Image 1 (cartoon, rainbow, N blue to C red):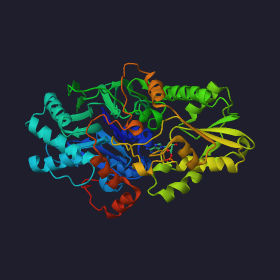
Image 2 (image 1 turned 135 degrees about the vertical axis):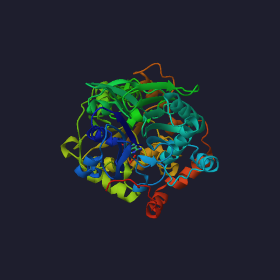
Image 3 (image 1 turned 120 degrees about the horizontal axis):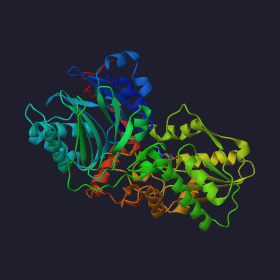
Image 4 (image 1 turned 120 degrees about the vertical axis):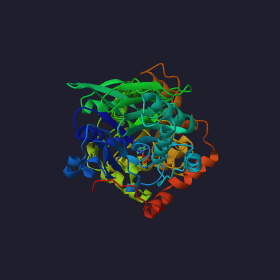
Length: 503
Ligand code: AMP
């Protein structure tokens, strides 16, 4: 997963972009980048690492200009080397820089087509570089030297026709303006905000509404699936629906785990969605586990806290914080190999023994992916003196890979792949395990916006909304994504496109 931001302001934009990226940091801790435009020239700083580590004061001084784009990266396809930090840049036509969140499902076909039809070279395995070249080629086809909003929209229409998958894109065209668009199903989120300045309106687009809050922009609306928003350098806003096949099918996992609770996506507060998940799961526990004697509900911090609190109140059982999280350590999931991932759970969480001693505890997590976290957390609960350890997951069993930009492991690495609840329970060594039903998850999230009729739920049910995900594609993905392939690619990767990067 990644986070994107774009701002067109009337004053220097570097600090705003930086601040926005820091509140989008949860969407990617792997690499960060900012591209600003000053007097018709791009200024770029991008590197591996957290936002606070990538940008030093000297970089910020040189990221001059009143408009620009930014990105935080979480590796999905490809590797985590700096060659694939974003934004990307191409000098033709006009000078275009692009960053994106998502994943293309027809990347290989597009790569070949760009080469044979447009003579465009894509230097990395990043989908974003591919998308940028596709977009740049379509801009080239649709405009002469005088780029008008309708030329931009024509280009985005062509991109939608060719690209399959999920993408929320921000792009800067030197001398013209900022373009933002969302795939025709709106799988990945993108919001539009504005702020009144003395010189006129300023605009911002970002992956999540929390970024608007952080830099003082007010929320205008979600960018619609298939829509493109174009903001000229001098602050004129244009927008157009660029696909007649557009239909909103947002990713449900954003609500389960990814997005911040203080964001709203497609009219649904992430926090409210989690509270509803807790209510639904609490009701299921009441129905199915009526006979169990549970003394206390304990969340696995932090995503599941809001969910666990609601479960506790539905069950009328005390809610206690039994684990303390070390704030200064990254998410365990992003560690490169399984062994490192195992160790890091204990570095991240520690149990408060008094909350467990002699009690039957119900642990709540938002989801179980590989099961490594759950297994160790259950072990910690027992070491702390728990009598019985029950486990509840606010998401259903994850059994299928994600092809739309979430870094999920390959099926073989998913604990629920090919296993039923009892088998997973046995593997994580719980005394009982319960998963949310998919119907309940959908109802919980939908409560915030009844107009959404469908969500992207493929990790739970294997139904891929783009309709083009074949077993062959999944096998190829498997080869790129499994732990040993990732380790190998990280070693091999040497290419770099960082021609203009400020060091
Ligand atoms: P595990 O089952 O050990 O793989 O870890 C599950 C935990 O990882 C859950 O508590 C989630 O909060 C978190 N999680 C779920 N999906 C992801 C993801 N795609 N990337 C990072 N962390 C995740």
